[in-house]
Image 1 (tube, rainbow over the protein chains, first blue to last red):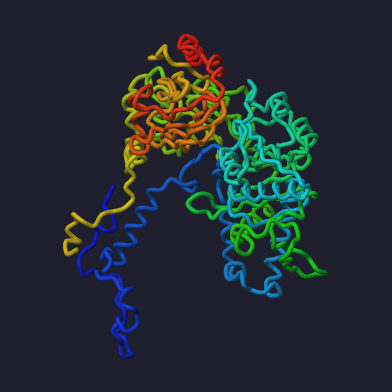
Image 2 (cartoon, one colour; image 1 turned 120 degrees about the vertical axis):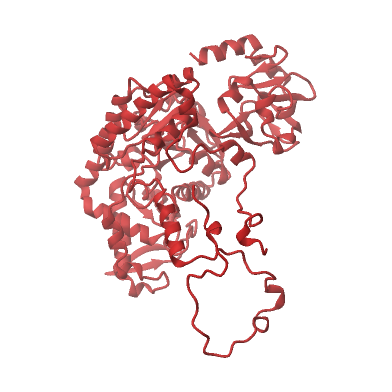
Length: 489
Length: 129
């Protein structure tokens, strides 16, 4: 690692100097009360413009990203984001819109948002959508508030949410945060929901079942129709975490599975930027019976005009300023319209084929934890490495040396030494072959030179980080003391 | 692997030292090995009532966060506050200084259903194959 921007500082060096002031300056103490004035100048690095450009350009080049590397991070759908999405979203007629523009001046954008809601309804089989939630987990929270509002309106106090152990990791957290009691359902030997176990846990206290389908193991819940029917018999709703919608586009609609509400992660399935602050978008779709509980404002049409409906008697209220992360919604709209119905179906089919190809290719080295076929992702177990004192964690670090971002490790918790692999539809066969070859190579290295694997990565600017020390004694602040450039402080 | 015979064990790898006033609870050598380096422990509040098999604490390692289940029902009467600043005690001495909390049992007969050290040793042997 080269030095920090602070360490490049040279006293007196400037990137830019303001021109002489053409009005008579007044002392700052006359303008700002003394108690708000700092006593010392801030410890800012003194660098030239070129220093700044080189420093941050170099840092950006150290990043792993989908634009530079294959990123098979299971459960996250880190697929390529077509540049066309960005190009259209940056058109001034979108980019220069302000959320306080009156609806009468933003009819084009509102039409786009309305059409996006309709498209998401069509894709999922839901009756209505809100585009407000800014992320998957916020979508879950919104969904849980709708579930509570629904039961309240029926004058039922239900406090339990059932969550299979194969569900998406955020589900129990969202349910607990919403004040529900979380009860975990154990999966059966095939890694699927055990209908008998579900039946045993259903009662008049169960507000909803929260499930992910395909589940976190990349397996389709084959009993889904029986599962949703059973929940409805007991007056419980079925919430689908749409994080794995990537496997279902054009193939099956959650609404037809009996799902009552769901969130979509546009930054996964619909190719909007993901990670690094995104920002994300987690629209929530509901069946007809839940529509009245959706957050306000709702986008409505009056004649040929789009208007905001601010009030809803039974609405859970606003969950985001204005109408969500609109720039991201524009990108998702472009993606859906570019591909069309047939194209979206091809996306899911290719994602499923890619995952199954890798699963088969790796079967002799790191077999899948549960028998396939899988959908868009699978979970391999690396427990065979344990005999050489090498862990999935070490293999993940070594994979970075081969130029691949590491898959999700140690999740789901039901699989020992788990590697959750999601190649996505945008990777070529050549890349998948290279990824499999790298993992096979690592399996060999674990036998011949386990210590080298345990020390990996070797080819990156930062080598093995002491995760334990970082977690136990986090030090998040760069200290100015001891640096000669800042001796005067 | 050390599995003290005076303790009782759960399938979820907690141990409990039977006592009618303060039954101490922790996690086994096997559990802390699987977790690897523990970096944070969230303990229940003293006075909280817990039910057998329900989450009572959370332990976080560099791998993931896991629930620790109450081996029996009762009231939490003591917690090991040393774990707040020294979570590594769970790895160093899981049957001693790395204990989590103590329960005053409300249904002492629940202890009878827990595993003995022999049964637990058998369980972990079968899980690793």
